[in-house]
Image (tube, rainbow, N blue to C red; front, side, top):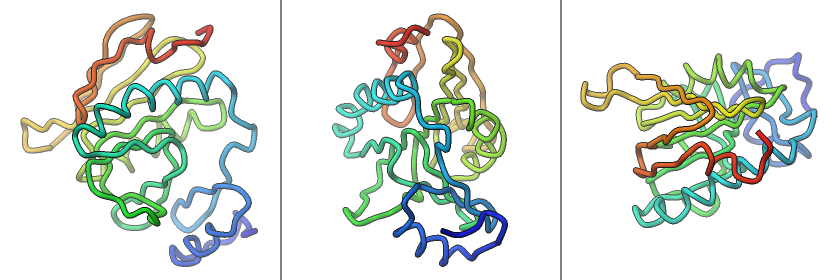
Amino acid sequence: MTSALRKISEAEYLLTEETSPVKREYVDGFVYPLHADGVTAKHGKITANLAAFLHRPTREKGGYVFASDLRVRVPDGSRYYYPDILVTCKDIPDDARYAEAPCLIVEVLSESTRATDLGQKVDAYQSLPSLQAYLLIDTDVRAVRLFIRNIEHGGEGWSEGYWEDEGEVTLPCVGVTLTLAEMYEGTRV
């Protein structure tokens, strides 16, 4: 396993990721293992709910939903992340190990990823020209934050919405509207 204290090239990361016993993200030459603290059932339920609700509408538009297993590559190759949900309307070969053109990314916040998901990933994901929306779902309280690209202004800039306790959220890219109750179904949040 590669030490997180030694910088490696993008090519070395991609090669070593194939044989790594754990999923690792790549950030500016450093690798970071995911889920060192494990994923909770609550996190898994929320992720599964979103993947289930997004699957049929995405397939009807010719797209694909990936839950936790497909990386996203930031355009300059300096970062690779494993989002909880990635939606793309671009065809992806069966042997692809990452996507470069997602239209929707969802991160379900956990204690170990919260700061990264709300910090550096916002900027990294917003640098993806194809991305229309970035949804963050809290696991401590029933609350979601949605960043939406301002398509009507030529894709320049982002708007931000926030819902707490209840409400409906419309996700661009696939045009699905979900309630917070649907997102949190089966949890005690």
